[in-house]
Image 1: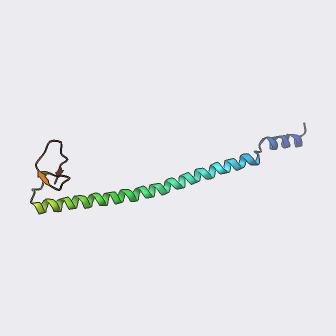
Image 2 (image 1 turned 45 degrees about the vertical axis):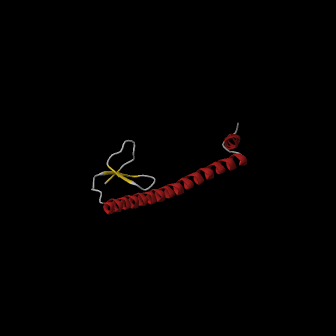
Length: 99
């Protein structure tokens, strides 16, 4: 076998078909799209967490205002019932607000 034949055989065995190359390109692009989408989701997640933190802070502030208006001592356990009544002191099985 001549050097030319050896080089041609080596080159032929190292080539991929156009279809294989196209499929690999589609896989690579799909992977990049996934990474881009994950980045966008992470930004969205951070915004949602920020909004949640603001809502939680506003809720706690409002509860403090209600407590102060009703004259409930800071540190006391108290509960707001679904009908709007406030129960001061621990009640069995009740979700309590402290502060």
